[in-house]
Length: 100
Image (cartoon, rainbow, N blue to C red; front, side, top):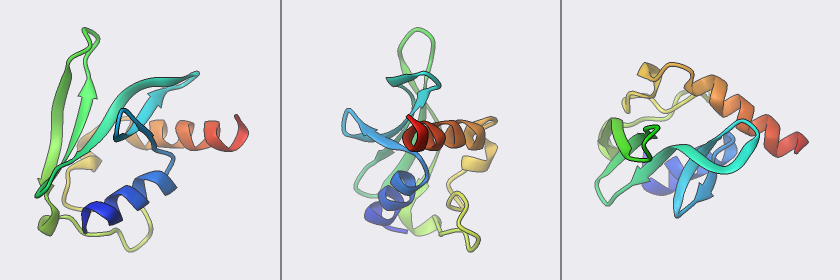
């Protein structure tokens, strides 16, 4: 996948651009990003914000190692499936966009 394809997937899956990064927010706090995708030139990284406010990289891979899921789920090869609660957070953000 490319940077543009990852961005398109994220935006269609409930992510919003906050601070220049596709991000997920806490439920009920639409401007408080707690998860973000940092899309660099050659790699994509998933970062989670710690309670102290510092971002920590929890998953990532080169664009060549990331492929689209055939069923429309999260991209394969980046490690998104290792992050507990990510799919629920994505659903909450998607619902907030639709019903908010």
